[in-house]
Length: 131
Image (tube, rainbow, N blue to C red):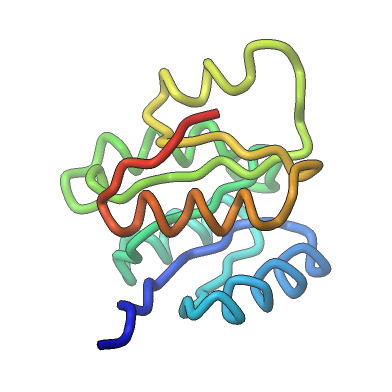
């Protein structure tokens, strides 16, 4: 029996990040949707209802904090795990994101495998690890 392919929405304003991590997620047997800014990410999440959302914090048009809050307040998307994936590493960022409803916080400086593991754990409902 084959493993379920998860549909993941990757929201990041950097084309290189979308391409590189999108490819890594595809190699991990995931279907990847992308968005380049917060407004587009929120709209795609509502339209596509992915299994998990990977969300950068520093985005044009609408930052990741606001997108996270909006998606967690919407009955259509509140159940979707949001993994914050950011280069922003100020003290307390991870705690703030978890309080806003994110399921996990992964720094862009961590191993790409950490991101893949978090996405698989949360998308599968195993409610993996945090921060």
